Image (tube, rainbow, N blue to C red; front, side, top):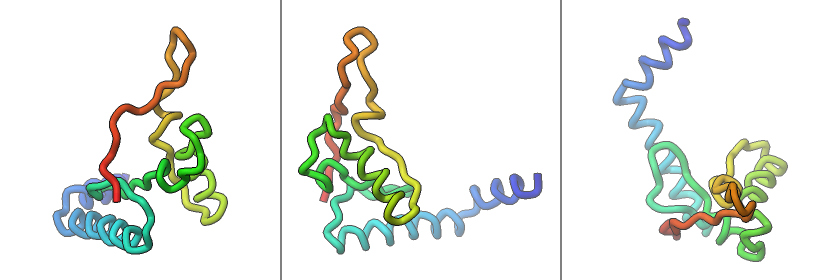
Length: 107
């Protein structure tokens, strides 16, 4: 309960929120400086890599975002998640893969 109470206090503390958003912005700007394709704008919660551009040699049916998430974990022990074709799911009637329709702005 103490840990939960502390988390709630931090979640509404302006200084904590500014620091968290600043960390995300810092990471995003570093990645851009290293020519890593990211989705823009950089958010306050996370930096999203553009896996389709990062692994442009893979077709959508080869799941570039899932592949990148797995490789980031294997190489660096960093847990991440895919928000691409796997998250879009399959059509319940046809069983065909759905493709994300919104194209992010990237750099």
